[in-house]
Amino acid sequence: AVLAALAAVGNPVSWLGDRWDDFRHGDSHRVEVGQNRFSGALGSHRHDYYRVALHEFAHLAAAGIGAGNFRVPYLEQRRSIDAPRYPHSLPLQMLEELGLLGALAFAVFLTPLVVLAGRAARARGPDTLPVLCALAGFTVWAVHGLTDWLWAFPALTILALGLLAVAARAGAEDVQERAATPRD
Image (cartoon, rainbow, N blue to C red; front, side, top):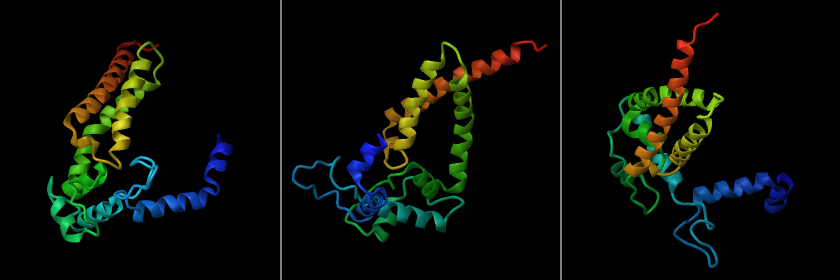
């Protein structure tokens, strides 16, 4: 597989450099003949969205600029014709809009769930496969949220957090069983 990938892309360092340049300077609004939005340019001005979000976070790191307030700073500082509502990255949006305090609050909310789900995933038993499937669903949502605004769809976010809760519940049951088992 590695050899096939190397044959397909050639020099991996220059290939990654080309993809990075395309991400920073490409134009997703222009699709070449024979390409579509998914096989064409990687550029979509996200690099500019991220730049503005990081700039705003640097100015108000503790409390952020307020939920839903990305659009105005972007319009003031933009280098593209776009007018996005979100910076297209959940971590950057949390840091920019909610600041360190809001991001920390979200981390405090998620950490116990992820820890319990991780315990359930490592446990061996009949519940392991459903737990892994639930974790896979949450992971797709979380990873996609790093570079896009999937969390803005309430039905998807509720589903992802529900899947994490299902996996965490199985982990909590495992912890309760171990606590109830007498030790020799």
